[in-house]
Image 1 (cartoon, rainbow, N blue to C red):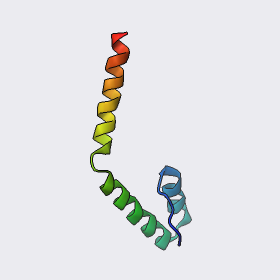
Image 2: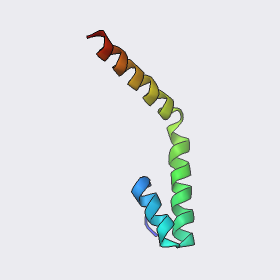
Image 3: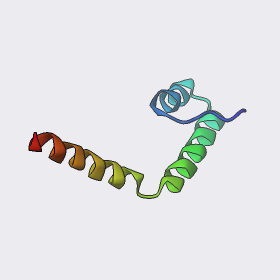
Image 4: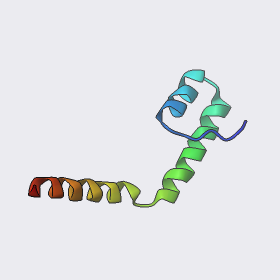
Amino acid sequence: MGVIMPYGAAIREAIVSNDLAKMEAIAEQTKQIVKGQGDMHLALLELLEAIDSLKNKK
């Protein structure tokens, strides 16, 4: 199986496929990507707060 870039639709596609090997492969790929992102989700929250703050100053 080739590399599938895991995102919501690809993950859901793996779920509905009922293909255990495909599901396990995409789960492992997704875990590695999430692990490599570190605190990106926290940085995004900070960015969104900064955007809101700037919008409220106008």
